[in-house]
Amino acid sequence: MTARLILRYPNSLLRTASEPVGDEDWGDRVEKWCSDIGDTMKANVGMSLAAPQVGIHKRIFGVNVRDLDSPEVFQQNPRDGVIFFINPEVTLVSGESAKSMESCLSVPSFMYSVKRSAVIDLAYTAPDKRRIVVRVEGEDAVVIQHEAEHLDGKLFTDRLNPFDRKDFLKEFEKPKRKKTEGELKHLREQKRVQARNKRKK
Image (cartoon, rainbow, N blue to C red; front, side):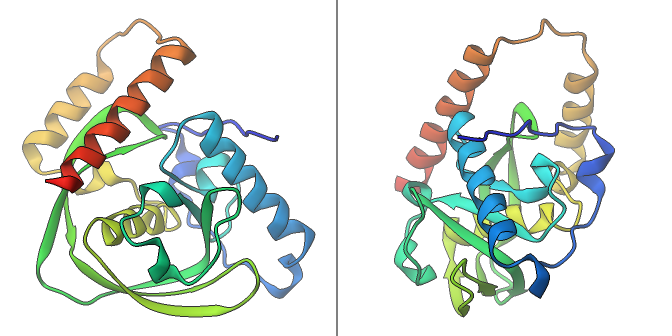
């Protein structure tokens, strides 16, 4: 198991746009990156994770299959419970928006309501090098958009309304007792349960 250190806000590397995975990267490099992303997600009880969050500035992210409403849409077999998306391209389809509570491993202890497109078209390459094009809806579309934005150096906090943005900055700047790793894992698990419960409503 190789769990990497997760970069946290306001680390400037989170604002660096990632490069496409090139022909020279396929093989051991892609296998290693996917393995590290998956291992880091597990170690941190993460729902999803993008490569730049662990210092790999390549266009890859992974999503835990158990946190997807319709994993079969993505037309690939999970690797140890994780579906990987390489060189994803997201096209917004619907003007209708989906509002969802979001959190992020790079911005621990914060959760806010974010508005995104309810329907997207997604083109991506699977780890077996198949290029796949699918339509994604609802909460699954929200997760994909969240992770895809990491690849462009964006965070979900960039989408906060002015009131929540002010609250985030105020809370973030408060002096805080550093949470133990056990407390952070517990918080992340609570957020995962809250997100699942919201999807079921």
